[in-house]
Each structure stands twice: as structure tokens, then as C-alpha cells.
Amino acid sequence: WGAPQPAGQAGPPPPFVRRSSGIVIPEGVKTFFNVLIISFVLAGIVLGGVLLFMQSYEEHQRTGASQALQLRLSEANRRVESGDLEAAADIYEEVLKASPNSTAGIVARSSLAETLNRLGAKAAQTGRYADAERYFKAVLDLYDRYGEALTEEDRVRVQRAAENLDAVRSHMQISGPDSGASEGIGAETGTGA
Image (cartoon, rainbow, N blue to C red; front, side, top):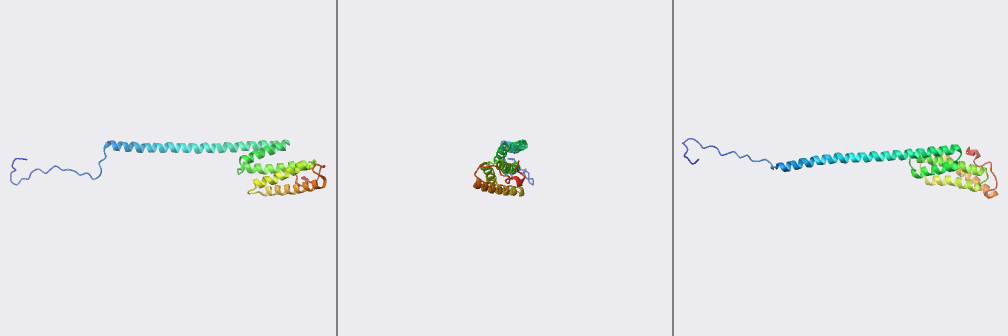
């Protein structure tokens, strides 16, 4: 470089310096971001697995609860078949309170109303009019509490209970609360025992 150059010859070109077109990221930073991305992916997979497990567990609990209610309904139905209407009514009430809007709850409501109507008819036919009044009133109260979306059968039960309640009250006004059997109450409904 310091020596004179012969005429007509140019010196060597200056060294080529390539300019970077963007930000230069050190290898350590690249590794950090790669580890961070992998961590997020793994965390997403774990979180998704946990959420799926929780959803599955909740579904299992609902199914288990539904099966338990169905078992209680079966027990109540066996009690009705054996003639233990009071115990059946208690079980139907329990199922209804546990899950009033479920299928089991709706079945329990209808079965409870039918059972209470039968108990009222039995009480009236044996001359226990105060008890009969309580049972028929319980049917009406039941549908007041849980009466949304009544079926045609539910409407018949309500009407039957109201008619029987009126008949029992009429009989009680004439002859007193426990003054002997009445043949007319519950007999025409097919619920008398």
C-alpha cells in the first residue's frame, strides 16, 4: 500500500463490508425465545388437559347424581307398590327438592302429586277428613311451588285434588273433621284404595 503503483493499475478494492438489513439478535436471546415458545406450547397443552379433565369430572358427577335420583325414584315406586304411600311420598319429595327441573324431578313431582291424591282419598274414605284435607291441599301447594310447564296429567291431578278438597271441606262443614267415611271422595278418580 505504501509502495508506488505502476501507472494504469488501480489498487485492490477496499474490503466489502456487508451491512445488516435488520436487527442482529444474539444466539442467547434466540435460545431464550425458543425456550419461551416451547414453554407456552407445553403450558397450553397442560392447561387444555386439565380443563378437559375437569369437564369430564363434572359430567361424571352429574351422571352419578342423576343415577342416584333414579335409584331413589325406583325405591319410591317399590314403596307405592307395597302400599307404603307415606314413605313413597317422602322419597318423591326428597328427589323433587334435590333436582326440581331435571327429568327425575319432574317425574317425582307427578308421582308425589298422585301419591298425595291417593293418600287423601284413603283418608277421606276412612273418615279422616282433616288428614284428607291436608293431603289434597299439599297437592295444590306442590303445583304452586313447582308448577311450571304442567302436563295434561298434571292438570288432571290438580283438578282432582281441588275437587276432592272442596268435597272434604263440604263434608267437614256438615259433619265435622273426623265423623265417618265418605264414599264419594276419591272414588270417582280411581285413586281410592
